[in-house]
Image 1 (cartoon, one colour):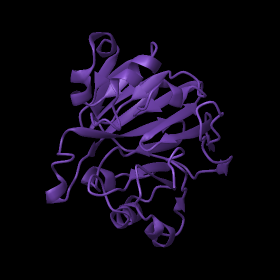
Image 2: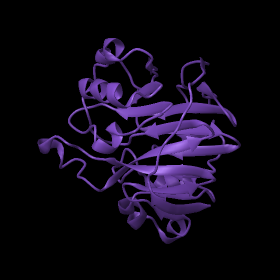
Image 3: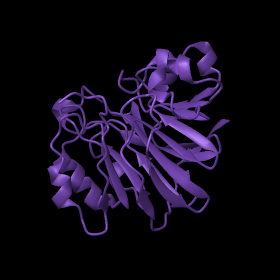
Image 4: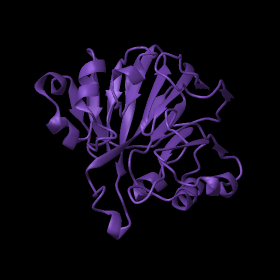
Length: 256
């Protein structure tokens, strides 16, 4: 079930406990090894999939975020109980993949993606605008503005189109930024337990921009994702005390 509510209110979180179980999977037939984070309502299991795609398992729910690349990428995972899509670019939104994996799962999207869905998927989808909140599969969700802020990059992600999402999973707040540079909405976040942040030029932010933003909104754990061939070394030395960096292989099938 998907519902929509009013504008974003406050966000609260607690200190985080984490155990690393291994690297993510390299082939679809292998079971994905993932990170596990304790919450007040059971463990949150994070599955990095590829580039901007991930899956979250929590409280008998399986949330896919920006699934692309065909059903074989998800063959080792449980079927989704809900799907979230940040925006309409092809590395985040792919109708053949959705048709293959969605089953009866509800969808939460931005308006641009909602307008592109076929009738069968649109019937169980809802679009959130920047700043709105809603619910999917019983999980509260806040839509956070996701766009470029550097003038010459605005053509890639203009204001008011894409979403990031903050998911409330028990006592943990998980922020999935989508494609964005640091926006006022991002910098105003507080009590975020886990943040997934993109950093590849020219489309999103630089690692240096990411470090500056992270040190302002201070998530407990940061996952760089959607980073391509970016040099992430700035994150190794630039984060404020108490912020944990989790680098994982988001390109398992890349060739060196």
